[in-house]
Amino acid sequence: MSSARSRRLTRLAALAMTLAMTLAVVPGCTGPAPIVDFYVDPATGSDLNPGTIAEPFKTLTHALATVSAGHTVRLAAGTYDEANGEDWPTQTGFPPTAVPNVPDGVTITSDGSGALLLGPGGATTTSALVFDGEATVVGISVSGFLRGILLGQNAVVTLEDVEVTDSAREGVLTYVNASVMIVSSELHHNGGAGLRTRGGSVVTVQDSLIHHNLPGVLLGGASSVEVRDSDVYQNGTLASGGDHSGFSLLAEADLKVENTTIRENAFAGVNLDVSGTVFLGPGTDVHDNYLGVVVDGIGPNNVSLEFDGATVRNNDFEGVYWNAFMGVSFKMRNTAVIDNGDNGIFFDGDAEVIDLGTAGDPGNNDYSGNSEPLILDNRPGRAVADGTIITVSYEDTLTPCAVAMTPFVGPVTLTCAGLNSITISNANNRVHVVVSP
Image: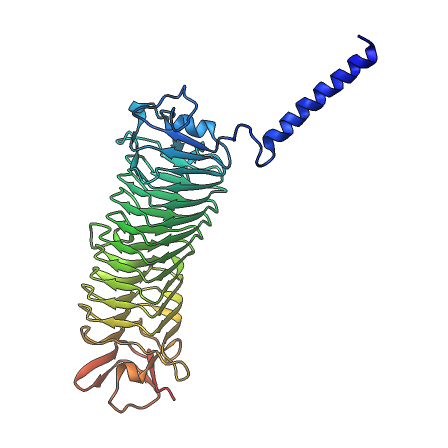
């Protein structure tokens, strides 16, 4: 064979090979499809298998060590624990340091089958899931870990239809700027908070149940939490302290709640301490707690509390108890603070602004059915009548009685139709009853 012919055949062979490889990846051409779904079955699988639906892996641990971005791990019904060969991430310190076991860009789902990730319980230092970036988790239960789920730096995670229970400490802990969406999930019976946020993390809770934790949600470290369409109930065991509340806020945290029930918590529905901002918006119902909403602290407090469209009712004692030495602001609009066992609102501390309605922006609040007085101004007395004036709408507090439209200076009780509506306990504190146009 001539050398020219030999070179020509070699080039033709190379071209044929290139064409075959190209056809394998062109849409519509035959060739093996990339594997994107990996299956795990603790009862019938083996980690020597390829992870297909016919030949699944045995452990989630092996599956997570195999997959990468764009892959989905599908868990069969069953219990995933150390006895089955699972090796869970361990953690040290606080905020905890742990090696992630969930790669960036991975989805974990049980396809509704009921998979349980079960920790060793007792003095464990493990968590079920620790994330290294973006991920989605759907339809699993997590139980028996030190902290059920850790979401730290760079985590952008959705937890949907996830149950976290029986953690020695927090059920879900977010920190270091994590971004988390918790949807249609249940966090309950954890030894610490059902959900704890810190370190600038941003969390949205939607259509979820948070109950029987200490507390339900603990916010700190400049984190932000928004809760919608959820039920936060029966957290805590003692009628004292933020840990026994539905929500407990520390250290510049921000909480926004809408269309959510906050009920039957051992201490407060919402406890705001040290610093932070709370907005209780439309559809929020705070009821049957020991205290409804508490703002507490013994020193100057960078705290703000706002109500708009909420209800605070049937709590054992005060509906709202404000005890900040000098907070930033208290504002209430379109809110019913009704039928509480003690005062509707009890001011035992002060704020730069206390606004329960102004002439240009009426409160449209309801304080009926509380123990008298409906509003108690028990702020520390002053040497002279200066400082904050509480503004409150006449229509909300003293209608149909005639009152002078000037600030009332304590001590004095404002009575209407035989009802003690507002009491100013101490000298030189002022309340201005204003009429809207």
